[in-house]
Length: 139
Image 1 (cartoon, helix red, strand yellow):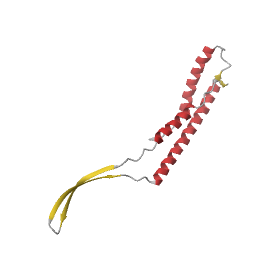
Image 2: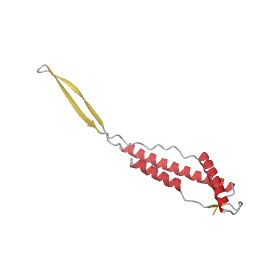
Image 3: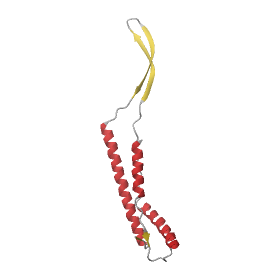
Image 4: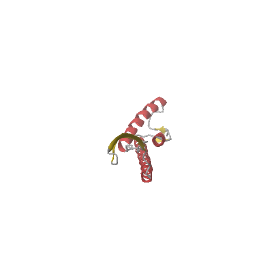
């Protein structure tokens, strides 16, 4: 469970990033017009960036189950007395963590984080290029 929370936290940090202030010297120097045009350009460029560099679908490995309950009945034969006897049993089987599976789970999470970082960098590059094409420059 904590692994999922950590991955979600890292993804949220990646996506938030730093806010860039944009300016377009080609537009009228009216703050209301600039804000409206900035909102339009930002929305358009976000869609372009997401379409050209989508965030990958990351599958976080699930944790192992805590255990299995097993119960049943027995029927035994005693050859010296020639009698049958019935009984019941109940137990819990707990899986043991496999070191190789633990390593591969951590490795897969590291690879997933790297893939998310690459996608976010690609999105940022496409977004910045789109904004520049529309005449917007970072301040």
